[in-house]
Image (cartoon, rainbow, N blue to C red):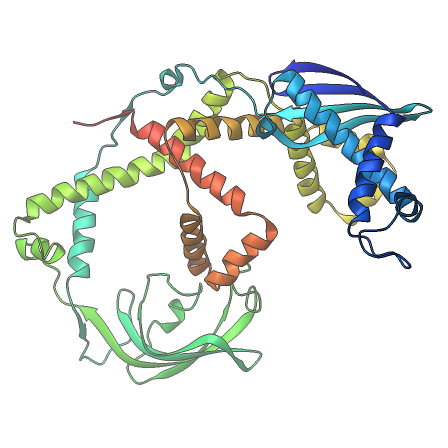
Length: 433
């Protein structure tokens, strides 16, 4: 067995080998001996089957398995020759050439390796960040919202219709094609009119309804609603208004501050305002991060930190992009491509730049996560998906299991790690007093 190796760069290597028939025969003998210990062959006791009988009965399968084992032996020897640990190999080695000759096999195998990444002084790529200015108007609005939340609801005694800002205490039941659907019924449900908690059009149709009155309304569930049987469907709701409630006079006072922190004897209105300012600053900062700074920082890291990338991973990413593209194409467009391999390859090639940047970004985030000690546990992934399910109106466990069965959990974990790494890098550059 003659093996030569070539490191194309730090992330890719090629192994070339000439495998003799004698090398393959040795593995045939070895596999046949192992099989003879367990094989059930009529006329022979287990463990006493002659090798010639084993080879005759399992001939072609033995040869295939022996060739596979010999190629694995080549790879093991090649990695040792290049001083590369098996853990550094990414994905399955790619067979570039497998030629059968009279004397054996000529093979060429490409190996992708985890790249060596030198981050360097990456922190210089991150500019200092000024805290967002919080206006007095924004402060007062948040303070008013808090005061409102601490002001109790009271029944409206006067004979008037339901208005925006009121809270409706109601019974309701929903019907799809005149059949009541699961989760569409409640009694004495409190709904603030104008809060947009319900399906678009639901709350507005209740305006003007008086205490004790009933009404039937029609609404259509959004196309992206979490329950598939209701998504995009028109439904009817039967509603009875039991009471109308509104909040009493909203007063901003020291008492409100104390209610917000019942276990803090030092809480004052000024201290509450300071906490609200910090809260608003963080909210504004997070919005700035998500809308602008995180994407910009990732682009900077990708543009300025150079290292070799494993070709196989880029090719995989291109295949994923091509499949996504195919899902958006019409039947006519797909039919046109069926017998046009050249055009398919041309379309696939258009994804190379984006695929390269995406792969590079993934390896960079992975390297930075190690430096910054950022981890995301399975429990945290589950909590994130459960929260997402609740927001979408889906059953949390089913939502999680759907991601699990589809193999998307690693992608969710990577997205969470990316978010935390970029947030941590940016937080370290925020100028605080």
